[in-house]
Length: 169
Image (cartoon, helix red, strand yellow):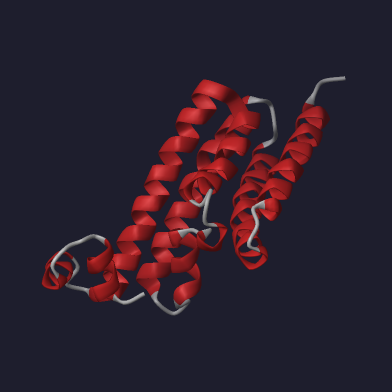
């Protein structure tokens, strides 16, 4: 997508995009990834507080499902796009890394609160983010949200096993 397409989609004058994003597409991508990272982190934190771990896994998957309900070909994530765009671009890589870490941290903290060992909690939180993000290109390629549904179901199974293994005997 070109910057002129972004301006057209936003029904803004073409020149305004360069006013707000003087760094061009790169700046737009970095800011989109950072915004997405923050919004999803906040949603994860709220969901953990209000609904717990299991429902948060579902909410994480639903975040992407809702956006593309009628257009599965649009499934994706600006954070993943930033991560994959240009690995040598340190700003894009940093924005993606910060977002992914921001999503993992509250999940790992909630797992530790459930008695899961710190390293296991960190590993599982990384698994959650990698699984959901990995399901997105699969869903896009398939033109279906089935891979995302499967990923969430698998995460629920893994969470159940992890929590069962931490219960005192």
